[in-house]
Image (cartoon, rainbow, N blue to C red; front, side, top):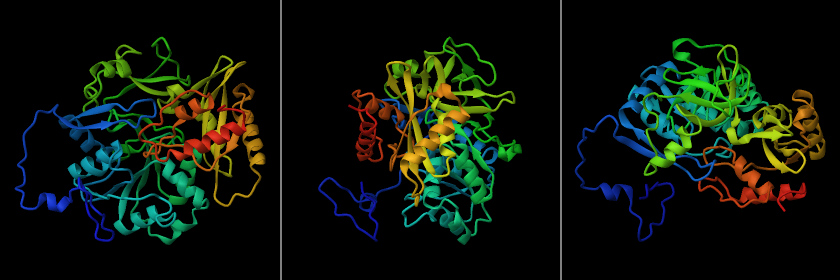
Length: 435
């Protein structure tokens, strides 16, 4: 089914149908009453951890939860303009381009394009200024792309951003360097918050519409109503504040979260409810501090074991991202005969950086040793032009590990550009991996 755009009409094939032609002369269908647990939609996860899973979304609970978040988390009133700069096919697009703003009485902005190259790095600022956006929601990877093109944030000064009240980040870990850059350039509060396709809305966030809590950079703040978030060890026992462990939610889950997977009830139980009986397993690792603030450090699979020490790749990425020449980075654990695993860093540099790559690699190795310590054994890093990601912006660290360890893998169907995997393989070969 093709929606024709008059600016550039598509040549339709034999199996194609034009959107307006399909509806010509058709009588609109009436609304149908359904039960509260009737599926609103089925949405497949991004597939960073394997085959995508079909998340079933119950209608009534989802609408109640989304409506609550618009004021209490995103702090918009009916009539305000809300913009979630996401792909409408992902969970953010479903929840916060389509359903939540319209239910709450907000104007929603539907945007097609990227934050850079359409035509430059001012696209976000232009849309916010032209449409009087009050609350803006995007992924950290989008801001890193802008920062890479305009590291000083000079271009934003040409746009009236006075209506904007806050920036919300989700979809992946928001590294402190990106948050600090956004705070400085945009001049508004920056709220990281954490949720998943499975939940459909915020697990942990900052209730800015009730009373904004102090921002702790690196934390999405605290669990929202309905979520009893705990940090567990491998035996399922709660850990002490500041200790790294698996993030789990004590059952029952709140309204609107997934009740099952489409045509896969056994996989639902195995994937989410088996590892820690009585808990929903999020698949993320992190810690809770003494103030109750949650920190998401990595996917559980991305916590690496270096000579018996459990280390967070996310913590190392924070250090690498703080280097003035680094626009974006990723750290993975690669196999090592002596230590079990070793961390390896991939660095994307800011546009216009002319320093030798070898010097920057030496810099970040030294930084990790200073900030985290010799226990990290961080000695492997390389500069790459791009990182492999899903179209929603999640870095495919698991796939990178498989390439490095010369293991078979299947590129996720959601990958943005498969060619990047060949670029990663070349970089790994240059370091003696991916044989």
